[in-house]
Length: 150
Image 1 (cartoon, one colour):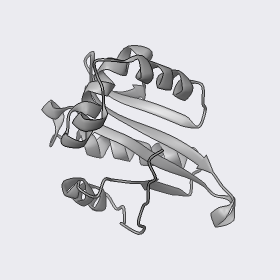
Image 2: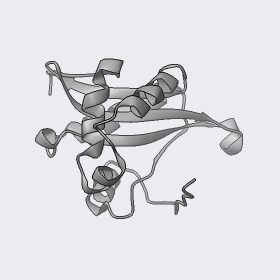
Image 3: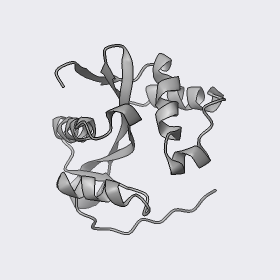
Image 4: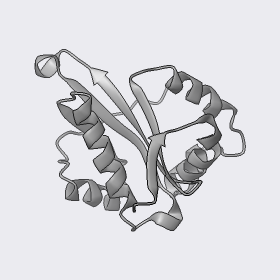
């Protein structure tokens, strides 16, 4: 994987990121790759927030993976900052190649570098394979998450 670069996402990466977000059964229902307007607006908000790291993995000139790392300062755990990993996607051509592991390892190391005391993530309850993947990387299913659509 020496030919892989993990870097901050750029506006030009939005189509490739959205395509990966839409390329699975859950994403196909909730993403709209035909209209990038809301994604471009979201990108501008992310780019302007120092606590948000939208990241891409690039091989050659092709975006092959992405994740968002959010830094969350807090009072609990003695004022600990935690990081939250979201939106992890690997291009379908790259699945099973070890790229997902490299992305998560990068996120954990970046969290350490930024003095976070905890890394957390959520995964849809239906993504059983993803749960095994995260557990293999040392994550524990320690909480039950709740969501309220608005």
